[in-house]
Image (cartoon, rainbow, N blue to C red; front, top):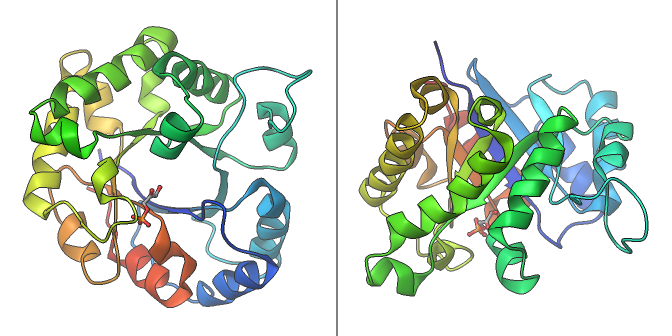
Length: 256
Ligand code: 13P
């Protein structure tokens, strides 16, 4: 079995229609290996426009659009939120869940994140579950405990069988937007821990779930990171806003 590789772009609160056009034309003749999916996650405001322009430009069918968030609630009085039904309506099939900025700035708890993953899976959306430790947690040797405590509530909520459809993005918080990438060896060691943690509960899930690395990935370091045994692609912030860089990163990914 080949495990799918994924390169996901998280535009965060950046971008506009000009960036949509720029990325769509930049990816026009991108070379992707087989078993690679590309997922571009703009702000809610551009989901539909990006999706339509990707289709109109007849880009590679492995290029998808994803949301940066979703509500764990079905519908109702939740101002500013977006539901799974709305994402389905827009033909969106991926969603980032539990990004460290959602956890730290908007105080999303691991239980809430678990409910969001469950809502996504029930709606047939692929959740990209973000996990990662802070610098202090890394220095004090708590990385593995923190990551376990972020993954386990999700497994408890959705059940290990359904977890097979989850994608995990490991993003050390200290490497996000700082230019401080984890070394490829350090990233591999942590990915290996995550894979072993999953294997304790299901070998099948552990073999199948793509593990993405995120945190200052760019065109210069992506090849070495993606070559690591347990790294199946990346979740890219800043470098995903530059079409030329992002294209190089997409082409570096390979299924394993
Ligand atoms: P940077 O690639 O800008 O460090 O951002 C990483 C990230 O948070 C992607 O979700």
